[in-house]
Image (cartoon, rainbow, N blue to C red; front, side):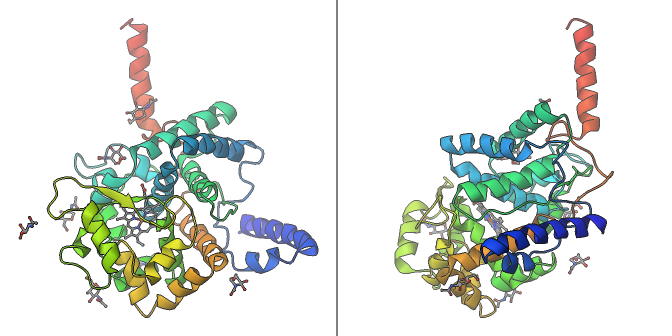
Amino acid sequence: MASYFTNYFQILCSCVLIALLSNLCVSEAQDYPPVAEGLSLTFYDTSCPDLEATVRKQLEEEFTQDIGQAAGLLRLHFHDCFVQGCDASVLLDGSASGPGDTEQDAPPNLTLRAKAFEIVDKIRGLVHELCGAVVSCADIVALSARDSIVLSGGPDYKVPLGRRDGLSFATRNDTLANLPPPFANASSILSALANKSLDATDTVALSGAHTIGKAHCSSFTDRLYPQDPTMDETFATDLIGICPENSTVDGTTDQDFRSPDDFDNKYYVNLVNRQGLFTSDQDLFTDSTTSDIVTSFANNQTLFFEKFVIAMLKMGQMGVVTGTDGEIRTNCSAKNSDTTLLSTLVDVAGELNY
Ligand code: HEM
Ligand SMILES: *[C@@H]1O[C@H](CO)[C@@H](O)[C@H](O)[C@H]1NC(C)=O
Ligand SMILES: *[C@@H]1O[C@H](CO)[C@@H](O)[C@H](O)[C@H]1NC(C)=O
Ligand SMILES: *[C@@H]1O[C@H](CO)[C@@H](O)[C@H](O)[C@H]1NC(C)=O
Ligand SMILES: *[C@@H]1O[C@H](CO)[C@@H](O)[C@H](O)[C@H]1NC(C)=O
Ligand SMILES: *[C@@H]1O[C@H](CO)[C@@H](O)[C@H](O)[C@H]1NC(C)=O
Ligand SMILES: *[C@@H]1O[C@H](CO)[C@@H](O)[C@H](O)[C@H]1NC(C)=O
Ligand SMILES: *[C@@H]1O[C@H](CO)[C@@H](O)[C@H](O)[C@H]1NC(C)=O
């Protein structure tokens, strides 16, 4: 509770200051969801002051080579938070109960980008070299998602920090139960997200993350064969060219053909023009519960950015592990207990001159 008030006091104070100069800040800050207990906006200010600059700089380098990784990192944060909270469980190799029952084995994981996992662990290495093993993998994922948005042209925001890395694996079934499929309609998506205390505006705003990145044909061919009447004809013809019926190759396409790598509101312009890729996208415009929200975001990017930040702050603080719970992993892919066991074996092997 104390940290909640301290954080808020700081936000409000700086906003009042800025508000004296411009009129922007106060009205935006008022809608921000509270900082979760155990997290803070100044968490690493003394233990790792250069954390955020280090993450930003590394991602600038990565994205110069491949801007597509921004989408990979943003999606990684979503998958992390939706399954068992933002505890970096998505990064763990292995499982609690044996082969085939891991979070990473579940179908939604299979399309996460391997490179995104590598980038996170690369950043973890840099940051731990700089500050010691004080920064969690879960926080690195959250910061990387924010920077992916910013470096793609989207809104900037301060990330509450202090997440710790979880000790428990999520199962394949947990993963499937918590990540809705692209075939779901708006009412299913709304109830899945309502279960996570995300309302209709949050749901529509978060789906706007599909303004960047790629999708495989297998995520939307159900709308081509047979052709979904809610899809624009020309758009469908283009997709049929990319994803021939019964093809053995699972092709990919940009999620937002208007501006594939820009974090903007074109996703909603696509929906209004019936050029959404997934049922879970297009049905947000078809369904009367959410269609006005889609239209308002298509007409006003500033409004979309505002609501997106609010929804990201909610999502990014779901089920966080804080305080003395969990741990700070020294390898994002393994619990410390497993890493220690491995490095002990390596040390022993070294001493025996293997
Ligand atoms: C609301 C329910 C959602 C569904 C059903 C959904 C489903 C999907 C699917 C099926 C893909 C394509 C996977 C593939 O075929 O390769 C995808 C990609 C993506 N999703 Fe979502 N998603 C949802 C919400 C979100 C949220 C909340 C975010 C982030 C805030 C997000 C960010 C992304 C990004 C950035 C990509 C592109 C990934 C890449 O290029 O590697 N999605 N999503
Ligand atoms: C989960 O996805 C990541 C990224 O593609 C990959 O490195 C990992 O091996 C996957 N896990 C499984 C079990 O397929
Ligand atoms: C996962 O769910 C499936 C289908 O509901 C069920 O048959 C299976 O036993 C579950 N697996 C575990 C490990 O609970
Ligand atoms: C949405 O999908 C659910 C689950 O498949 C189904 O029960 C429901 O009838 C569908 N709703 C609409 C409006 O199509
Ligand atoms: C979400 O679903 C779970 C499992 O069905 C349930 O226990 C929980 O109370 C639900 N939470 C909310 C906020 O609806
Ligand atoms: C694709 O497969 C389905 C089911 O096997 C079949 O009915 C259809 O004719 C096939 N289409 C083409 C173009 O091969
Ligand atoms: C767009 O949304 C912003 C933020 O809510 C609002 O201040 C602005 O008045 C809106 N612009 C228009 C043209 O409606
Ligand atoms: C990190 O852990 C993974 C999974 O146990 C392992 O494959 C990898 O070699 C480890 N990396 C390092 C640098 O120890």
